[in-house]
Image 1 (cartoon, helix red, strand yellow):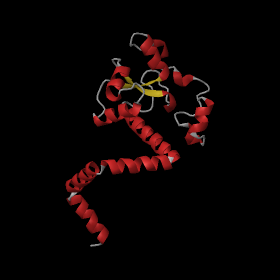
Image 2: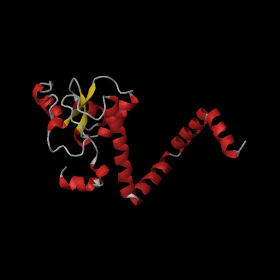
Image 3: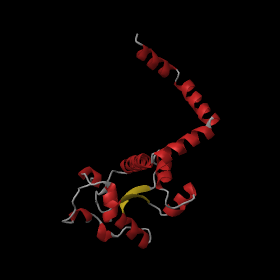
Image 4: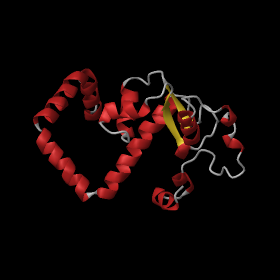
Length: 176
């Protein structure tokens, strides 16, 4: 048996023991590890932003898939840049504020969804349908049902701009 195979078998047989060791280490060296992380983030701001953005998209896309995929539940638009998770019964701002103390911290919300096994009571809506729903007494407008993908200038068909070679910073500057 090779050393690599022996190590793999050891890790499989001692998963909990290894996990406990790492948890204890992190707890005992919390200050040191936090300082190391802060120093790394300060020395590597671009990579930190890339990592944060990738983590956000990973959480967001997993939540969208759990609630029906990257398509608006009401109008059918499939452009990821305009989709979000909607609280079916309303109360999204209050729920996000309860989770993180802010209404804008969606990473905490997406982690909460994941950690709670994507509970019922949520759906994927585009910004238009979500806004119209909030302005219409928590009911989506019937006039929007199934309409969004009929627009002649749809373009990317559900792909992020960076999939077309357009950096996200350019998209932000363009206001897309």
